[in-house]
Image (cartoon, rainbow, N blue to C red; front, side, top):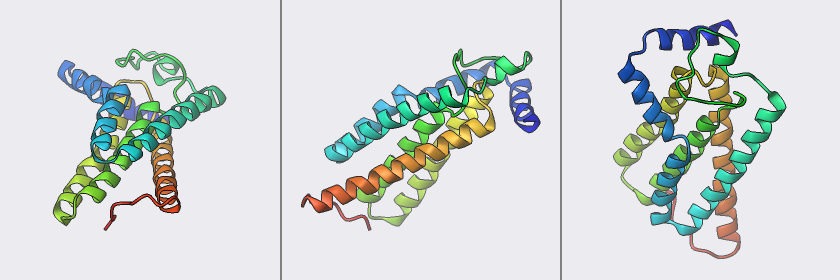
Length: 185
């Protein structure tokens, strides 16, 4: 656990007011604001897929809540007096709900990008940017003192797994019941 404390302590000891403010804004994209923006983008391209996103978000949020109750890991600022709570968080730490949601959002947006765009440069650049997005959210959670590294890693992993499973289920249902799917490649 020492390396996780050291990561947070390093970020917070080198943080400026602007740095903290930046990450407080970034962290909003891993919550309801991020969901709303992602939902709108997906909805504009595929209404049925946006319903799958909604269900994934709800299920992911419930699973995250239940895991926090089962694991009961204290937040870093609770365990260490010298770590500050810049995120004004309460409750338990593991897994990171913001990271879980960022994993869901990024996976859905990458999938939508591949369905909508055919040129490889757009796909490549979009995938690169959308891969950085959840990493930035995870980083923000550590900078703000709200989560340990493993909290964010578990949250991201669960979000990606939920999203991939959900998209595969969506594609299966659409094919099975005769709905026309846009070509993936």
